[in-house]
Length: 147
Image 1 (cartoon, helix red, strand yellow):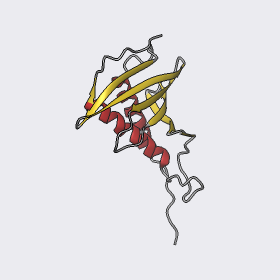
Image 2 (spheres, one colour; image 1 turned 45 degrees about the vertical axis):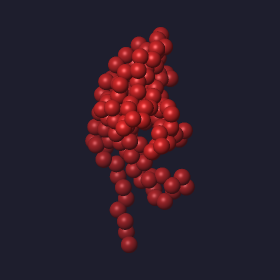
Image 3 (cartoon, one colour; image 1 turned 30 degrees about the horizontal axis):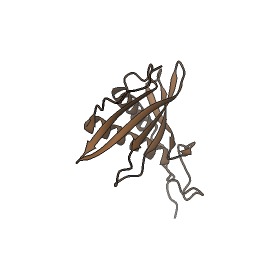
């Protein structure tokens, strides 16, 4: 039996990354000037603090890390690092839970047991998580470090 090999839907992937850039800009509008931003999300009485921290900054890109505290009972503590391409208005996950270097397509099965569309899934998860932050986020008044 011959199975069809997965191929990335590049327009859909790029659309997801473009939407993630816009979501991040809404959550952290001063990311080109500030080193960090934080806010809370409240979901059915569960209070979670979300921190967005700029790890690197250049004229055309930024490296931003998202962390959540404390660990929610329904989730692992997300640790997501994304590369933002300001000229293209695009944000792509470059590290998730300490794992890096995601290929667009994986043969399956593979040694790391990554899904054929692992990269697309991780970027889609980021989009869903940022959408959750936008719909349930509240300002915390926590002081933020500035440049």
